[in-house]
Image (tube, rainbow over all chains, first blue to last red; front, side, top):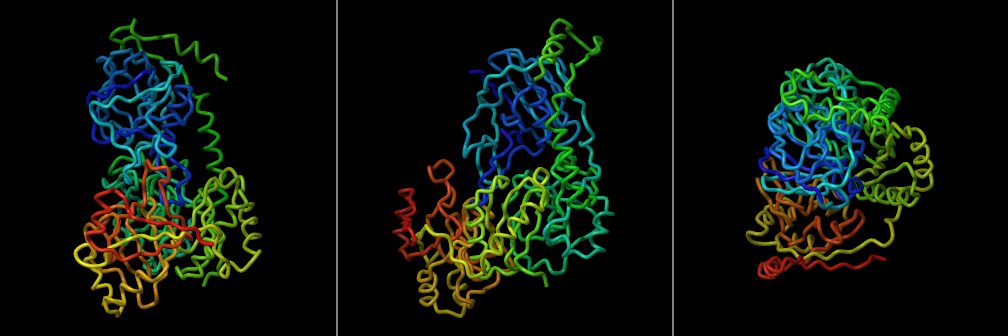
Length: 334
Length: 242
């Protein structure tokens, strides 16, 4: 079996997948990759199931080596990356030859970067998933010396996907949630009109939004603890909004002013500290329509994959590139 | 005042049926019973479900299935009976869990008894003599909120947090006892200590407790608790409730 050897690794690298559904009633949230679009992009590049496990990297990646030739893909927050010293582009698939050194360095844009491997990471599942649930201690962060088993796969190298604009903040759409109408019309309008900055205090449980405004609801002390879904925006005791993510607690006692659409959540997740974010209400019906279109787009990512066209002037060693492999395999799209 | 029961969408991730705005015994029982009844229907669009102190939650991809069809179905089930008077589901489990209620393993027992207006002996008799229902599981994996204690146990959370109350602790506030799944800072008062592990990730049964189950604590000595801890067991016994 192929394995990925971890020689050096940053402090925020963990195995993730689409999460561990089915345990809400037991107090365990789904967890899984913070940016689910990045997981799907990697799956589209490698022509494999989005359910296969990936490496999620925050801040910096590490130095990795495979013991057989394997195709990898890099998605999400762009990080510096090289294979045996030659820079490789992000949002693309590449051949990682056996014994070559894959070095993934600091983040250049966004927050969560992903390393995908053809065949997926084949670590031992716990409760039906490989996702590391850091807040509950399920699984551990990847450490230097780890050997991560890799499943078998056949993926094309040299393919790329266009990058979208989700890595520098922007406007995200929200639908009304359970307690939205408990906030006054003035507070809701002010919430929509406020330009927030993503606070540096953020993790896989939630992201705090900074502004000079507070959004407390005077009745909020009496709210009974209630279920949380990813994207819920809770207003904490000091009036600051927190966007709750996949690894939040299952329930929470702070009121929710709205819920970010799942398709816009990657924009919140990837916004780097200090990036500007705004929230715009849409109705439930509008939100359903927007999300249904996004679901279709995410499901059809494979058709946006194109061969990676390189400028020969940028290539240190032309012969080391597989210039046609991706073009050929693009023809057998199912 | 909003009318209950109330059916609401939760983001695009599901539908919530709420039976009241206070975690009373009847409201919680309704949430558990309704959750069980809907679960038994095995509706195909419901991917999973849970119950909270006052609500039943059904996780549904609303972008795929819409809100109205499930809302209509849930309204039909709501109309079938008075859920505030419903029986709890059959086949629930009674758990008997040994715990220590004095000394350094229960550092706020005396303070909590005083806040409830009880002597130590009276407080111990009530904490070990009351069968508590698992009202909900949440906050941490497998962590139960147990209730409902008598009205004089409606003691507020303390203003300052206790920085680190250990796994297995029994903490009390607002007529409830919570049994901690992991070391946790809390404003609830630390009134007892068990060896119970709420979440056992690699065990055949990772989670023992289910909402609607009942828990009875038994008073054991510190050496007995230490003996359980040394053997990596919790001394819990289970029986099926008829």
